[in-house]
Amino acid sequence: VLQIFFYLSLRDTVVCSQISHAWLSMTQMSSLWNAIDFSAVKNIITEKYVVSTLQKWRLNVLRLNFRGCLFRPKTFKSVSACKNLQELNVSDCSTLTDESMRQISEGCPGVLYLNLSNTNITNRTMRLLPRYFHNLQNLSLAYCRKFTDKGLQYLNLGNGCHKLIYLDLSGCTQISVQGFKNIASSCSGIMHLTINDMPTLTDNCVKALVEKCLRITSVIFIGAPHISDSTFKALSICSLRKIRFEGNKRITDTCFKLMDKNYPNISHIYMADCKGITDSSLKPLSHLRRLTVLNLANCMRIGDIGIKHFLDGPASISIRELNLSNCVQLTDFSAMKLSDRCYNLNYLSLRNCEHLTDGGLEYIVNILSLVSVDLSGTKISDEGLLILSKHKKLKELSLSECYKITDIGIQAFCRFSLTLEYLDVSYCSRLSDGIIKALAIYCTDITSLIIAGCPKITDSGIEMLSAKCHYVHILDVSGCVLLTDQMLQSLQIGCKQLRILKMQYCGRISKEAALKMSSIVQQQEYSSNDPPRWFGYDSEGKTLKVNQEMKPPKSSQDAGEMTVKRSIVSNEEEEV
Image 1: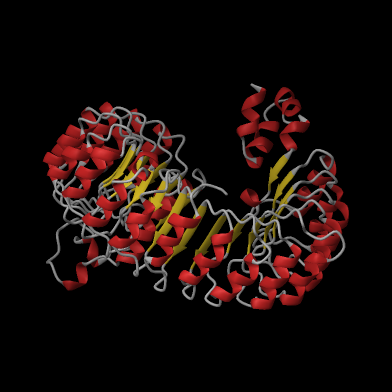
Image 2: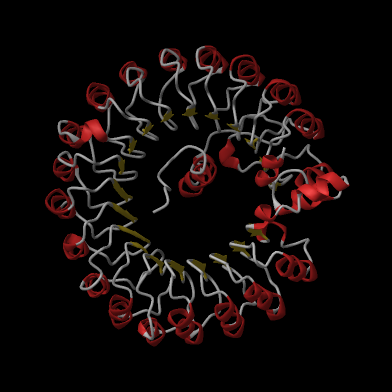
């Protein structure tokens, strides 16, 4: 019984302590208070409770999370009593001051992990880091814009921050080339570097950094449009294993030629939405024997020839995750090559590959190692789902905007997919309660169900789901306009593990019922507005006339899909 308490949130632990004297004594185990997450209860907790809790468990606390807490300086000062603290997250704490950090740093010299992102700290705090945090290994200064290049120079004072291995400078647009030189002099042991949302980042900044930071193994540059192939050339002196670029127009096939020669141990390559990448870039990658993750989403110049070049090499054996979303030139030929060469592929996304047909699924079903497939936005039909059902081992399937599929296809798939845990059939407007019935009969282990934009779903369907599928954690019914308050009652009875609930554009669900439900789940989205015209139907579920305004805004739709799915399905966000 004692072990159960380790899985409870701070709020639940406090509730349990009020049940009986026996439970109270169990919640007073010192090991339960090694990690305290105040961010989860920031809107209901009092500062007095925070201070008293830290005072009581000051010698036991190892990890503290204050993310987004707007406490007074006096409250932050109480952290200094936690002498054995190792991890501190004060990100998004707008009331945190340099003086608060001085008090914390003097009392907590053993901190290894420090997240200061999106706070108002200045050069004063930067001067404190090397003076007191001698063992600091992980530092996030993301979106801290009040320190300067000189503040980075302070990192070399005293004992310095020479043990730092992870650094996040995302959004710190004030840093110049000189600032990166200062980092290189102070923190030459950096291995993992994240610099996102940095339009001021240039090749020269990276060159200045890698002159002394030779141990870098992973870099993430998302939203750095001025980075070019020259950065890859500069990084060639490092033993890179993971790289992530996104939305860059200056990167070309040349960078991939550098990878083949200089990064033999690379395992993760994310080059999403890089318009300069063509089929020619994939041949050099085919020789990377340790490559396990390749993401080329939105690289629309890549076609069957490029995939053939890549899969003809030894990399096809090691690849575990392949994202080819929006590579619109791909056809069933690529599916055939994947089936022939990728014996260990677990995750595959062919989202919006509009030339993929049901015939292509005849090949995909033979990739027996697959556990997750994204076929959203393709032209597959019920026949294709019947073919896919032969796989029998898929745990995750995304079919968003597959307009040809009906209840018959989903029912056929579910009948032979007893291990299914994640299903996204959003914006498949022909689907009805029949798919919920199939899940309730065959797929009772389902944990995530996305049925947004399915106007035929009713309260009866959700009632069947609640009666049989008790492990649902995520449910999106946005645009299911026939649902009423009865749906929420069913969920409360049968889906007690529900954590995330989305019900935008559900006009028949009352605000009162939605408010009540919000206190039960961890995250909820609700609105009673009419569905946008691009949903294709009105508030009664009746089909609208087709016109140019009914096309969904692609960027927002893709982003919404990834928000839910990324944490459930993909291992792309693996920590470095």
